[in-house]
Image (cartoon, rainbow, N blue to C red):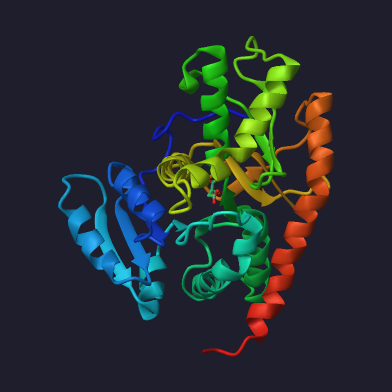
Length: 335
Ligand code: LMR
């Protein structure tokens, strides 16, 4: 039986420290601006390889209230940036290129992820670690395998943030139903790529809301293409930034609630063996020590079941690519 504890009630006051890696990127800047409004965060550490993060930190510290800001740049400061953090979030630093897929970003993002995993295993192996770095389907298995290799793997503390998919599903659905998007919820399962994002429109809450089968098909197509559509409309200059930052902030707010002693549901891609893959995304119950329960046995329509059947081999391929990439980075000469 699951009881949601009211936020900040029946629980100890904690000093919550959050580290954002890639803070000087477009997604990073918008994320930290949102997090600076959060009075439940005591310390917010910003890290980026790019020195401009120091100016960003200074500027942010001029906005009254919220967490104390510290900014760190260059590789040797990474341990200080994440030491004592309860949650470390890596955001995407480089946008996807026009015409390319998220899968093609593994090689680009692998080395910074490796560096973060190595540092976290040495300085702060107990932290929650969350990635909003593409390709999420491969990055989370890649990071998990690296942490395992460094003797610091904790399956209940590593997350791929997929709140962007539930945010988009809610807004698309709300438009169709002409209701407030904040009053409805739709589970989105699978992974985070065009072929693996599976919204369960048969499973809307409140349950009196329904969509017709033809709407289900259209909404699903629209949802899975959202990221690519934004990229195309920005003429390839950037991928989604504001909605991604908004959804990372939503994830972080919920994790803070968990750190304070409540139970929360986040949409995330985690270790989850219930759907025929090692990693799977969906509603995930989290408490102060990490993941308590991953999704399983969610009711599905025949249409959604077919989408799942199509997605499972793709997720398995992406997981294998992530895990195999460990060999590539661990055997590469240090430059
Ligand atoms: C998104 O869904 O918007 C992100 O994964 C960024 C991208 O490249 O599509």
